[in-house]
Image (tube, rainbow, N blue to C red; front, side):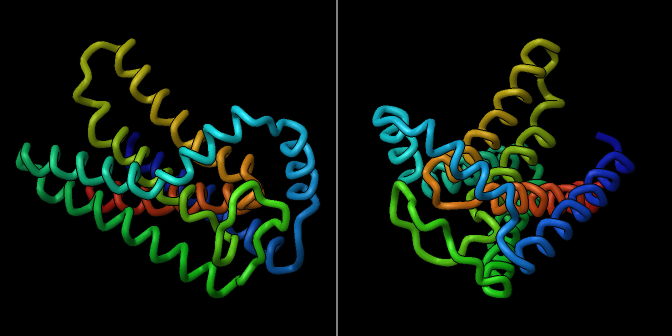
Length: 197
């Protein structure tokens, strides 16, 4: 993406985040209740087992992928990119926790697994958005075959969506927590890539 595309993405994501932030502070947005009820209808043991296992490993998986991507960049003498990747993920996690502390939104009551802490925004969603978008940004250009490049980009986008959906499916986050996390992630990636330019 060009610099002006990233700035446009940052502005749109900022508007989305601000809108959701206001809705969450005012009260629980109606869309959260509707989606939570619809997702409850999808619950079944095998899918729940998959998402529970995935959720238990999310932190390790995301940190492991971040370290692998950073080491790959570092080994290719792309130290600045490696530093930007790690600092963006860590910075996003810290920012997400600061927003959680300010908003102090309770999590949904009937969750499939036990989670602690506040709900808005989703840490998993912000970290996944930052990590996988930066992986696309740093590595997709190296893939010469268009089909393989498009597949690489699609897989990374699907991983972002999988992380977000799993948080809603397990009912540990509201829909707006996930969208807010994605929006914050896009803002951070947009600012980081603009800095890189």
